Length: 141
Image 1: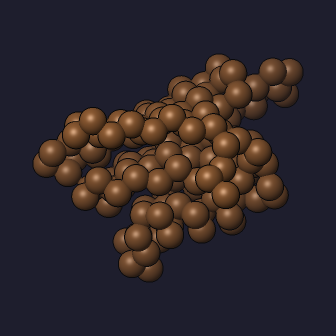
Image 2: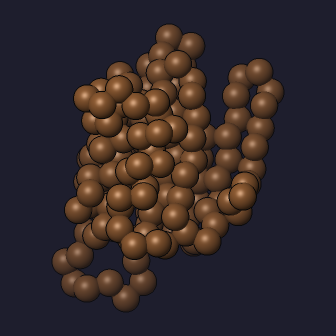
C-alpha cells in the first residue's frame, strides 16, 4: 500500500504471508523551508514506524506529525488500548493537529488496511496478492 503527498512525499507499508511488517517513507522536502529544518520522514515514530502490530507511513505537516509521533501512536493505541488498526489510525490522524495536517497508510500483521487523512484529498493505493486494487484520491464520504 502506498501514497504520494502533493509532489513530495511517497510512503509504503507492507505485510508478508508470515505477518512480518515493513514501512518506508521518502520525501522531496518542503519548499522554502527554514535552514536546519527536518521533516517527519527521517524521524522514526513520527513519519515512519513498524513493529509486530502494524506498519505506518505518515505524511503532511511535519511539525504536527513529529509533535504527535503519529506513526508510533497508531501502534501504541493498538498495543496499549486494544484498538483495531482502523480505529487507532483514525484517532491518530484526528489528534494530529488542525484539519489539513496529516494522512497515513497502515497495514496490520493480519492484513487489515487503512488510509485515513484529514486533508482535502490524498493520492493513495492498495494492492493485495489476491488481485484486489484500490487507487483513490478523495474521501469515500
